[in-house]
Length: 175
Image 1 (cartoon, rainbow, N blue to C red):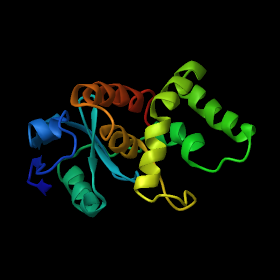
Image 2 (spheres, rainbow, N blue to C red):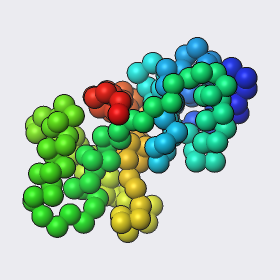
Image 3 (tube, rainbow, N blue to C red):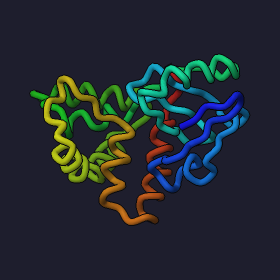
């Protein structure tokens, strides 16, 4: 990843269906918002979030400030969807509390179940493969879901999942 005055060049973006892979260069004028406060920073281009590795957060912040790009604080809904799958939750009450938050953010109980059913098996395998066992210290979110599903889906299936998952990421407003 390379930051120019008014553009960002992506050299090796992991998801082929992303604008960052297809175009390689994202102009400042294409960027709607940047979230540098998240565990994994994101750049919003159209209806897509592009993930930025930790070592680039400082440069990303400078780029946003230099180009007057709004810096936002976006909720990672995927982390809440994942909690009952990957964390050691001790009660149904805790799951109901998480689901109530998701309901308040616009997710129906049916949609929550549908999403969790689709990703559960592969996310658990991803958790095991990446040796992420202690979730008191680790964080799984949107990018992890994409990496997990990338391993199991064929190219067209993954592209469909990728864009459906982006819609989920934009379900609610910014905080």
